[in-house]
Image (cartoon, rainbow, N blue to C red; front, side, top):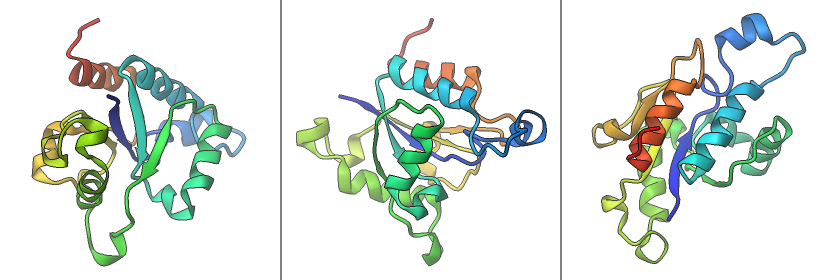
Length: 159
């Protein structure tokens, strides 16, 4: 059974340092952060669900852009877009879990599923998602330290 990462893109795969100093050619994503996520998905056996506002342009466009910058991780879907109804991102994630986590696919019902993490620079998650939430500083984006913590959380291994 695969673990799941709910992925925000802005602030995670692009960040302030990237835009201020490294990004000289108008790039939209930091390939070093994508490489970190690629490796994390291999090490922790993860699939990705896009929870970023990038999904609003369509999942296929989002996947194509990520692949263009070197993403090799498997993207299995996107959370529903409910922001216009005043719903926070945590609710969108909860709804995705409810609709997609089934006993035949994951061996449990959605309310018992715990093999997921949320990568985001915002903190609009539900209280019951707190232990699954890995807050990313939008200044630096995804870091090796955050990847290490996620890997430990999902695999229960120290390296």
